[in-house]
Image 1: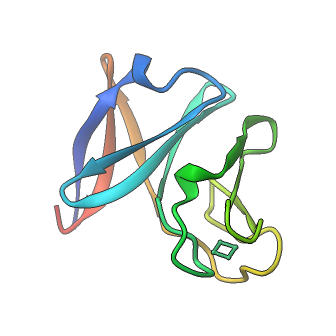
Image 2: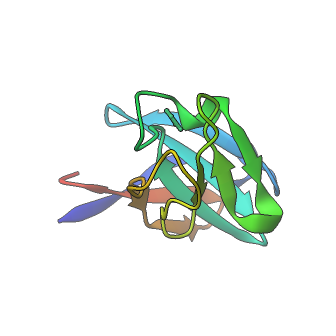
Image 3: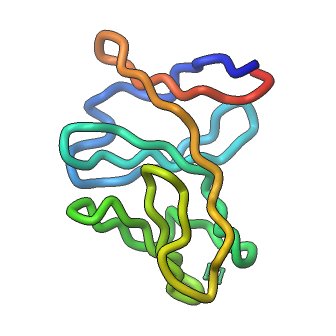
Length: 107
Ligand code: FES
């Protein structure tokens, strides 16, 4: 069962940006695009790269791995280009007042 945990204030992730946080021992990346927030694990599904060191393209809801350039849809986690073919882990996000809450499994 997932529990929603506060990760940041809304203002800490301005529109069109991404930012990494460590929450309950997990590295996650929160992305802000088109008026909504998305959270993914800060780990590429291809190899051991931190996605937060890559690039975020808010117009395409896309995060690009810095190591080999695989791209992922932050809404679904789906791999959009090789060399990755497996999805990345995504987490549900809620906005409550001025806080961003992320659902972490087993929290
Ligand atoms: S580690 Fe991300 S594309 Fe290879």
